[in-house]
Length: 212
Image 1 (cartoon, rainbow, N blue to C red):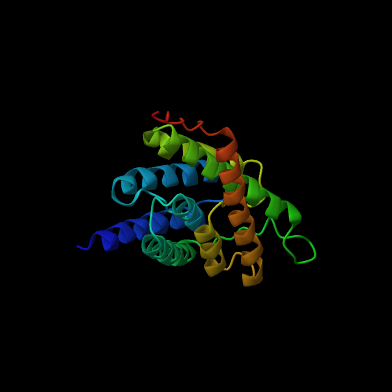
Image 2 (image 1 turned 135 degrees about the vertical axis):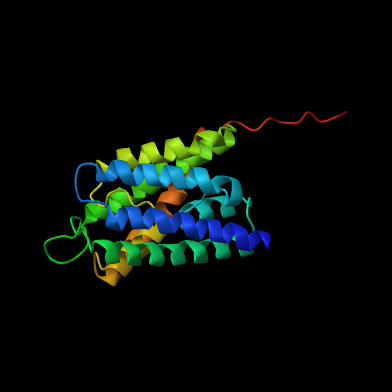
């Protein structure tokens, strides 16, 4: 099998399972925990194949670092969105659950939802970038799962931090399609915030001494 196709299929399967957990999970106090565990397991299972991005925002971060090329980035995003569609459709078929808690009373998306997605995405990418910089990539599944669980407790969106999740929930019918764009913009902004944080707090580059 073509290497890029294999990696893309891993991204597709991982996102499919993750979105199914989100959209079909019981709406109770355990949902954030089960969703976080599902994400951590999918990153663990796909990490050795595709890097376990499972998130266009994460793929964008690695593309900005030139760790993947444009073709890989586009293939990953396509696979992630396809997985989001498949997982959301399966979740809707199983239970038809929806969460509209972050929609304002006037029928527009609440500002706190935008702010929450910036924070959740920035934290997610900052954690991943820091672990990569410190060569602690083996901790990414646990760290990401822990962050999603934590951020879900203080954001009205449940800490999507993932354009594929936003797309999948639109497919499921959790909110009007017009609400998706502001959340994706917030998530991209979160990636930019994380890049700045990594530049500021990342390890200093060693200067090579010039030979006389």
